Amino acid sequence: AVLSGGPQAFPDPENSNLPVFTMDYARIQVPFEVTLWVLLASFAKIGFHVYHKITFWVPESCLLISIGLIVGAIMHSVHEEPPAVLSYNVFFLFMLPPIVLDSGYFMPTRPFFENVGTVLWFAVVGTLWNSIGIGMSLYAVCQIEAFEVQDINLQENMLFAAIISAVDPVAVLSVFEDVSVNEQLYIVVFGECLFNDAVTVVLYNMFNFVAEMPVVEPVDVFLGVARFFVVGLGGMGFGVIFGFVASFTTRFTSNVKEIEPLFIFMYSYLAYLVAELFSISSIMAIVTCALTMKYYVEENVSQRSCTTIRHVVKMLGTISETLIFFFLGVVTITTEHEWNWGYIMFTLLLALVWRGLGVLVLTQIINPFRTIPFNFKDQFILGYGGLRGAISFALVFTLPDTIGRKKLFITTTICMIMFTVFIQGISIRPLIEFINVRRTNRNLETINVEIHSRLIEHTIAGVEDLCGQWSHYYWKDK
Image (cartoon, rainbow, N blue to C red):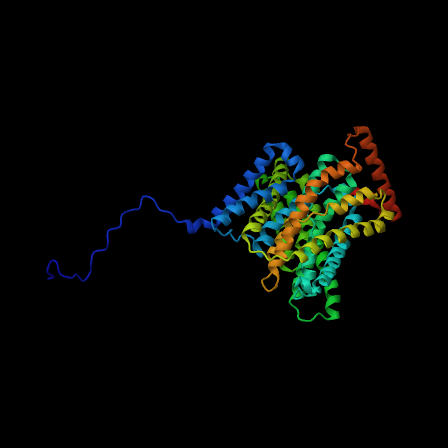
């Protein structure tokens, strides 16, 4: 027997009462903070549109960046680090697909196919012109000893030039819609922005690989050119295949209307992911998938599903773009910058010069082949409307740490975005009004005129088909 008060072999466990209130923040931290960021950015958007005169003169992207700057300043003052939400995988796998799907799905199809040659001319050749021109010029600037940037080699300059060649004229397009600029100018800027992103990401991945190579052989240049075309055309092929599969699937969904919209998102996203799997252009895949399936799907699904698809696509795209602009403002204050005014100022200057030269040269080549050629005013707005935005920021922010001057590239890109979005974005509306750019005729045609126009177009397309000759009437008919 054990004496009372002596040591016990099995002591009684401590009494633990049922807790009335507990808190486990670590478990819900990531989804909780992401939800708060989305809510904060959404409240900012609501606030802008309460007073319409603000968004009339100042682009929404400017206001979002401004709110981000304020939030960043508050976080910096309390020594709070921003959440590391914008990693390479998060951006490319979750934030970029909704932005591109939104643009591809709402692309005005008839005007696009009427101007498809010009759009691809500016998007592909124009982006290559800007990337190579800016990259070579910046490499020459790096040779000036006074700027102390001789350690940036040609490959890294080309990589950086590819990043800042991504135009993002969201602000310009909203102004174009408000003032009703001519349809040709609108669709070329819209299409260039969309396909330019695809070309930029292809160049980014290619130059990213090249930047880590110690020596670039002549054969690598030819392989790079071959890869450029394989990646682009491969992406289009995947997009068309998934677009037709989505269209075919929706023929059999009449009895399960509640999941009709799901097929559209799943096939679009699957096209994007499969393209990423094979390292080909995922942007081209999701854009061509959206363009291919849009009209077939909208004929097959119910009106309610059609409305749901349109709203959800627009909502997801808007949220992603809003978050990136908002995050850009926060990071501008909270990140550690590397300032080199010579490199930054030359980058701004060279970007403007090469963009302007590119538009002038490429327009002179394409104008003889256009039914309605671009005049000098159109060319000026095309050159001036080359704003940089979400894609450029996300690409530079997700650069690998092996790039020695990554901080300088981030700082220069942020300066570039701030300059183009705030200066060019705010001044584009007064400029369009001042130089009196050609407007579109918004007067709705009578049903009689519409029917006769369509009849003539179909007839011409049929005659061309019999003759074995295709022109833009054939593509309009599609």
